[in-house]
Length: 175
Image (tube, rainbow, N blue to C red; front, side):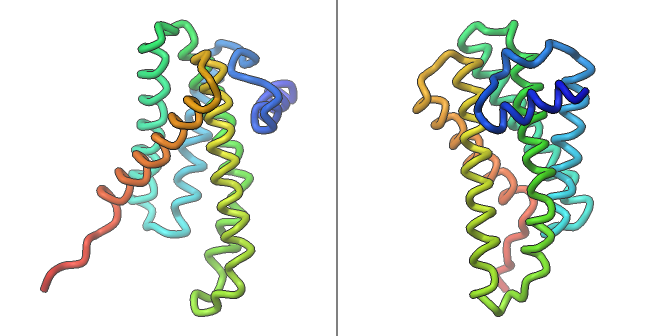
């Protein structure tokens, strides 16, 4: 198991790719559960539990669907298991790493804008890092140029944000 953990860390450090992950249904399922559970925990600081489960389910489904469609379009069906395992495992691990930061940010006084600059910058850095990791994995899996992989990563981020906003953030009434 330490070897698998090292592979995921190497993916986070952009030193390994999805091709370095064993093609294993068990490992895929474990990565899926890690990503989903980490997403629920990360959402709990801003949303009620049921919404957090829904947000994580929508995000996990969207990410898996994006990877699957992109691989199908490139006729790389044989890479689905390893790519999904790499994406879900690496980004799930990164989400777990960011949980203390989420807790720190949630504890800040909303009226003190000076105190939330550092955690906000660190959170932005983690977001950029997660996009870089996703782009890195997609670049290897799809055999595409880095700019196209970055574009797919941004597409996922935008779609995830729009879907989450549409489905889980209530709109203020008009009266």
